[in-house]
Image (tube, rainbow, N blue to C red; front, side, top):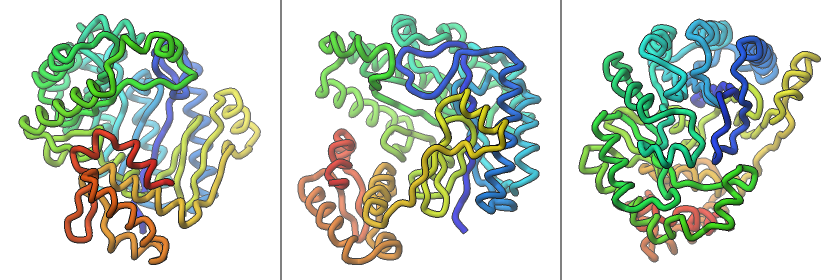
Length: 381
C-alpha cells in the first residue's frame, strides 16, 4: 500500500504578506479558529469514509497555512488525537508545523513539541529589516533571532528555515550575508526560494513596472549557484531543487509528494491525490464553512489523471529530487511505447548537459537545476 500523508490547511494569519498567493485570511480571533477546526474535523470524518481510508497509516502530517502557529498547543493536541481515531500513525511519523516568529515564544514551541509536533518549518524569509518590510512580513529581526536561539534550547528533533532571494536592490554580497547569518544557527534543513509573483498579489504591479530593481536572470543563477556550493561545503545535501538538509533531516512530507505518494488534504483550498485522482477543496472560506455546515462535499475540482500526462508529471516530480528517475521505475508504471517517447526527450537533454544519465537513472545536472522550469516544459510538451 502506498505511503499516505495528510495536509491540514489553517488559513488564518496576522496579516497577508505582499508576495503571498496562498489562501489566507488576516483573522486572529479565537472563535473563528475554533469554528474552523471543528469544520475540518467534520471534513476528515467524511473524507475517511468516502475514500475508505480508515486504518491507513500516516507517515507524515503537515500543518500549513496561513499561520498555524496561531493555534494553541491544546488545539494541536486535539487535532492529532482526532486524527488517531481514523488513522494509524507510523512509529516514525513526521509531524510538521509552519511557524511565524512573531506568533510564538519558547514556552509555546515547547508545548507544541509536547503535543506531538516534531518538526518546525520557520518562515524567516530574510534577516535584513529592509527586505522584511518590503515583503510585508509581520516579524522583526529581533523576533526571528530570538526564536532561532530558543529552538536550539528546546532541542526540536528537526526544523527548517525558509529564505527568499532575488529581492529588489539585493546585491550578491547581501545575499551572502543572509546565508552566513542563517548558518550561525545550524538549521538541519533550509528551503531557498527565488521571489516570484502571482498576478493576484500586491507586489505584482510593482514588479511589472519596476523590473530593473530586481536581479537579472543571470544574477539569480549566480546567487543560486553560489548557495549550492556554500551549503554543500557546510555538509548540506541538495536533495531537491529548493531544499537542502543535513543527512537524515530531509522533509519526508515533501518527499512523499515528489515520489508520487498519496496524500489527503483537508481544509479550505487543500489538494489531495488518492488512487490516481487529483482533488481540490473550495478556495472560499465562506463557501467551505457553508458546505460543511450543510453536510455537502467541499470538493470543487476532481480529475482522474490520464496515463500520458501523468507520465510526464511523474518524471518532473522525480527530477526535482537528487534521486531523479529510473527507466525501470517508468517501465513498471507505464506503457513501454509512451515511456520510450519521453526517454528520447531525456536522452536529448542529457546530450545537452542539462540531465545526467547513470545506468538507467536520469537526474538534473547543476546546469539543469539552474534552468529547471524550462527543462520541465520540454518534458511536458
